[in-house]
Image: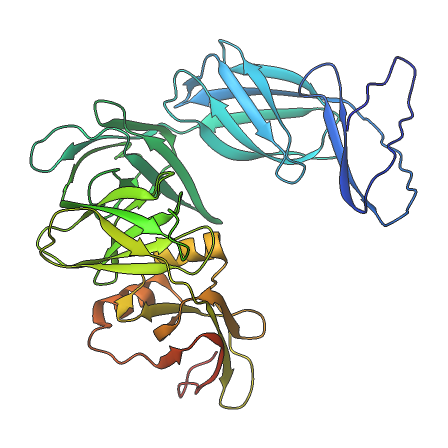
Length: 422
């Protein structure tokens, strides 16, 4: 709900609210004049609060590679209260705006001089009458083109993901290749970067890792992608209805090779390596995940992938031999002989909530999974996961269970290695 306060009026009342947590937000005459606060209301409560507005001014200067950025916009977003406002940037790279809200904001600098926005955080801290921001956008740049490996033709609409390692984690930016297959990231920080290419009708190439610094400010990439062989299929649910918006992943030997999404009729086409067998892993918005093996030599025609009807659950309780809880770890999973890549496991967690990671009680609780043969390897780092994938066919999985329809529970005991600390 919203209400407009006439001049001189300072009280507002909202009636008939259900219990919950609400945000009260004031709006001034310009977009940057906003102030939000949260208030909890119980069933039948009558709550009263006072909101004090203490206006201040935000000014600043933005440079790109040491020179004035020029015209554009600085977009500030409040991560908790979920509101945003854009501040115009002048031709000399300066900006000025009235502000009401204090705190830490995420910032996006947008300008014709930048192919992609520059993302950062700014602190509009208390105790300062006004806030002056100086944003220095680095001059690192990553450009490239995506081409078909055989024909050399440009590949449009490929998703290009840029991962930048920063002090407290990672920063991710994505864009699409244009009709000419080209992409351009500007205003990139110095440091370690990884570029991942997700073409719509080709196999995904290996990630490209490199470093930008004072002596290597520009990285130009010529990415060649393999079309493989196209597999057309339809995803059907347990009632024989098409499954729209299902995520489909082509997997070979525990590695993700391509991905796509089904249309409203449950149809899609995905690339798989030529001359190799593969498995399609399908994750729908509802129901357990499903798999379909694609033989090395496939006959023509559209395949059908049926998502399983029965659902099961598996509780894995991990403890040390002394009965203590384990430090947190993740599980690499193989289902009916198919090793599920970590990227696919992440999508299982995002879409269906299947978390292959221990909780605070050292439990892994997998809900709404299909029955069948499961194998698990515990790991803690990405390097450990990669080592497991490379040797999974030769090494017996330490956790094996045959999951039947309904609830399944197992307990796993871990012995500490001599001379090592947990």
